[in-house]
Length: 204
Image: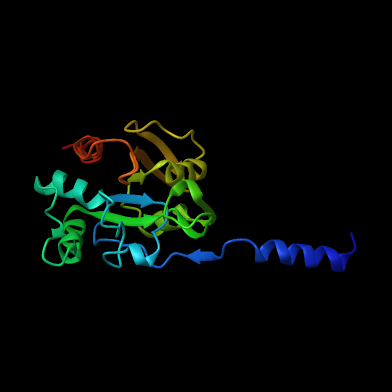
């Protein structure tokens, strides 16, 4: 195949690929971060109930946090507005030292949904750089299998079992890596069981 035909072929292949989406938000870092929760990538904006992490109304992450820290699955939900209460969420994160980011900085959606199974990570997180900037973080918690795989690769360790943390290093930093069950409703585990798994991270 000649050079001209090769480049035409390559351009046609790229044209048929889904577009690359870049992450819409910066990491959320509280004043004294100790925990870092990492998902994969936000859903499409039409699924957001707020411009913040875990924005989908049917994702149970904030219900899990409500159960653990407030004893109420709806403590971070605003019934009147039918959305999560972002002010209450940020207050909790700041109080407990919980940082948030994702493992995909740029992705392609291979299907028109939010499933991790159909996300191609084009640019992964640079976790070592984030830890250089925030060395107080020692607990890294991934909320799903794909996110865990990204961090396990950067830490050069096998993907841990759910709820079974491993001590490892990323760059110059020692961390404890936790793999937690996905808080998506598609993950077949009851809400209270998910909360029980996440409690282990906080020793509650």
